[in-house]
Amino acid sequence: MAELTTLEEHRCFDGVQGFYEHASEAAGLPMRFGVYLPPQAREGPQPVLLCLAGLTCNEQTFAIKAGAQQHAARHGLVLVTPDTSPRNTGIAEADADWDFGTGAGFYLDATREPYAQHWRMESWLMEELPALLQRHFPLRTDRIGVLGHSMGGHGALTLALRHPGRFRTVSAFAPIAAPTEVPWGQKALRGYLGEDRAAWAAHDAVKLIEGGAKAPPLLVDQGEEDPFLATQLRPERLEQACAAAGQPLELRRHAGYDHGYFFIQSFIADHVEHHARGLAA
Ligand SMILES: N[C@@H](CCC(=O)N[C@@H](CSC=O)C(=O)NCC(=O)O)C(=O)O
Image 1 (cartoon, helix red, strand yellow):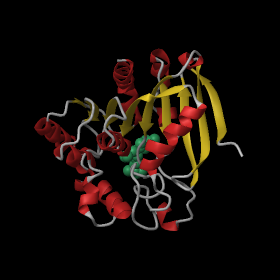
Image 2: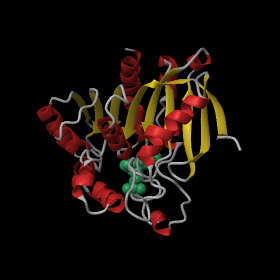
Image 3: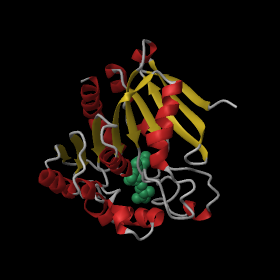
Image 4: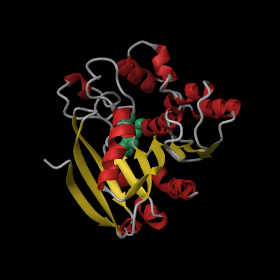
């Protein structure tokens, strides 16, 4: 059986936007992801931007809604858009809520049953997927940046902080910056990791920075009309932690913008340029 199944491929800004599935060992199930190959990939391997989406999203959401391909085509960046959780796991309770379980993997490896067997997003993204991508696509896994939105912003920050040296560039839109302190994060961390608060802290960007973890300079955009700003996101906690630790952070607050993809579309060009510059250096 083929290692990789092509689900769809579409010409896009002179490159190719595809969606693929493979039998993931980490998840123990088929996992899906998107890859945008810019036109430069016809000439040879190009740097990669891993794009992590938020709650309720799948591998198509960011690819369809963010408008990133036109900028990736200009800069010669490969975009990789993974699904946000395993699916069709047979665990009925995993489909009960939109902010936990299916579509809400929080980019970590669960240790609590019934999730521990399949919810292994960190292992999939950090180990299995890069090796698979390297075998099948013209891209450079030694030059990877990571970007994320909301739950995906939490993923971008925590994966970069937990795996120093793996990502050369990091950025986020409206990240869940302090998940141990907010309802979305507490629900996920309790559900996937149990009651051990030390285990939670290892997946909280603010706590990681306070504990001395370092990441490349962070670019973060936040809409001031985001309905989740005060209750779920808490960018001021990231600002405080970065200032105290000397972690470079550019936090841009934008009047009038909310949490959705119209906000992302408005600033995605800056993010792709940020990554392209850092990945070329
Ligand atoms: N269904 C929820 C809203 C869910 C939501 O806003 N999801 C965001 C990410 S939130 C944090 O990770 C998203 O990206 N949705 C996809 C989209 O196409 O906008 C509710 O009813 O409040």
